[in-house]
Length: 507
Ligand SMILES: NC(=O)c1ccc[n+]([C@@H]2O[C@H](COP(=O)([O-])OP(=O)(O)OC[C@H]3O[C@@H](n4cnc5c(N)ncnc54)[C@H](OP(=O)(O)O)[C@@H]3O)[C@@H](O)[C@H]2O)c1
Image 1 (cartoon, protein in one colour):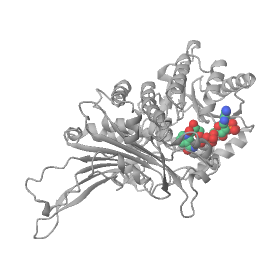
Image 2: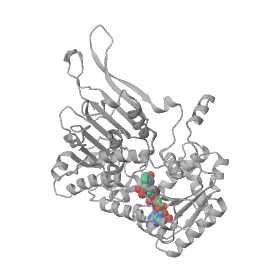
Image 3: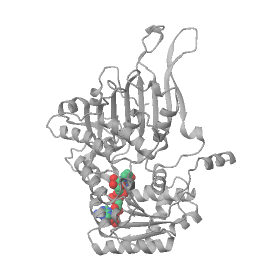
Image 4: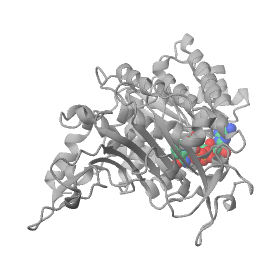
């Protein structure tokens, strides 16, 4: 790294977390903990952002020693860290790592956990401050929460104000179960202590959406039904379900992706400017967007939603052949839908959302297509009127923003051609951004909630998603369409457009 770059990298670093903390990860040796959480912690440690008094306690049902658990995390960090780990720093971090086996149904195990935490506090100076992280399969949440409450680790009335809890997605499986989870949590912890994670919100490029919109005078005035023709949000994966067939087959794309990631992105692109960047202001504007989206009737769902499932392709399993998936599974691996935001800013502008597995490319982007100006000066022979102006927010893999507009092609003839102006995140700032989980863990350690979803957002998202699922239960309403691996989903996904000129944008 050059001197200049090193200086720049330092200058972008946030303030470290100061409050002492034991991070207690339930499901501490699972896939998420190994792939994301442990590497994120290492990178925070390398940037000196962890509190001075810090310890990690991994918790799961399997019996392991501290030493064995450290070995698992060491290997995981070597494999998944965005920067090769430095041995001295890694070993110092692992020195603060412990493990506790726990069977959620056994009262004695909870007592032992509480006792172990007191020992860790005494050893690491963590003063009873806990960040509890639920990284187990969601079916285990209720039992873990009850156990935490039963042994006094989650009890606002018993002075557990130093405890915060992070809950992995999915937050519930439908609106009633999410409401029940919220009700349970609210009884035991204050809303300010509940961090509902959506890792999309931790991505730099997603956070940049708000900066781009609200700090640049030249774009924000254009983002309304006066100028915008439609908005498309795509989160496409080229991978299949992999090892997660068991989980995915009971969830599907609508609940796994639309309920959280895609609706959160929709909120960020559609919300009105908040009065400030503090938590209540941002959350209030997001909830207003979701409330402006009506639940879909079965007739609307039939017109506005397409669901699909990938079938076997060249050397690739079809979804039903994947491990853990039922041979006659009706679970959707693709969904495309049209939503209307019925408020003064957006009425009449369709929002198209699309997500799926085994699609042509891994790409997440938001494309805002502007209305075409009437050809006052240039006649159709001069220009390609099928290329309207577009604003493209590229979220991954390479984050950035592009603007597509017309320019005069070189030469004596007056010929208009579409061109693009590109901003590339990494090239412009010359430093790789942190992983989403680094940012979110650091925020949770510091008590900053802006990038976490509130109870009302979760509730409203489930309302919309549940209305679609209810329609799917009516025979013949939205048949499951097959699509080949490596395509952009079922061709029927184009049927949800309100006009003939719109097409899915994949650039
Ligand atoms: N994997 C990812 O990339 C990813 C990404 C985003 C979100 N998530 C979310 O993160 C959570 C964890 O996902 P994961 O992929 O890490 O799951 P996982 O590997 O299947 O499970 C994590 C660990 O939880 C423990 N566990 C399972 N059932 C338990 C129970 N009843 N009580 C206590 N511990 C239990 C298991 O260890 P023991 O058998 O030893 O108990 C397991 O190793 C899920 O909610 C998932 O949706 C995962």
